[in-house]
Length: 150
Image (tube, rainbow, N blue to C red; front, side, top):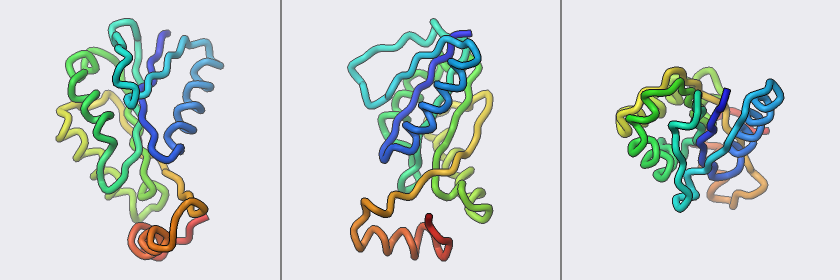
């Protein structure tokens, strides 16, 4: 089976998830190609693939604009394929945040007009070592709202 992984990563967690999915699919004998939606100059023909995995992070309630634009523009071709959409967000890491994480995915589907065959919310990561004081305060008091970061 030929599988295309379409993704965009902001801080690196979605890239790690994409690499893992690529490795797992390749290890089971599938032919895998990976396409980053940040690379807008490289065309991709979805017709060549049997299945498509889409993965993108959520920041400020939205998936990356380039990712959503690609999904919107490719909606008709994506609708003809078996698709799995992985929505990566920190909210998905906590039971009390999962409803909101599903809301992010619902909002993206409304904006793009695309509904995948299957969908999952996936826990994002915290990179506290790269945050300044203000970002750490927002993370701890707004995003995590009392949860402990690792």
